[in-house]
Length: 149
Image 1 (cartoon, rainbow, N blue to C red):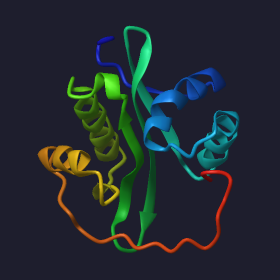
Image 2 (cartoon, one colour):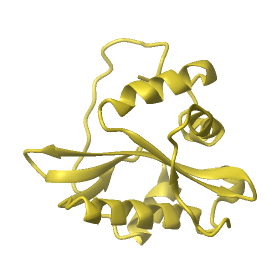
Image 3 (cartoon, one colour):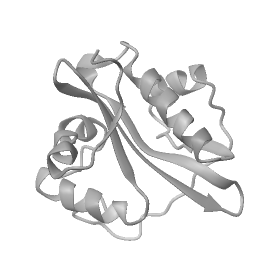
């Protein structure tokens, strides 16, 4: 591991370098739209964090800090994915510890994420990291879109 350093993807090159790992989770993403989509999300507070191992991005997390009436200030993890080739090597745990610390530094009351109902291995990981199921997330597809935005 490269000193277990988590970095924020700030440059276009850093953001684009996260695409391959992020697309393992978000298979609908299109490489030629990824940078533009992330840049648009940044205006809503979205940040993209990543870690490298031996020069390759191995874990990526998209997150934002915001406030709502139910939870007050909270850090919400939009996406968290470790590349298939790097799973079970501690990268996801390091990323979650880093994100948790960011939440504490920002004075957040809650640290949270949603996970698809079929992602059993991810759920096991989240439970092992101290998360609990706090709510059901409901959604309704209103129309098909060609982008993930």
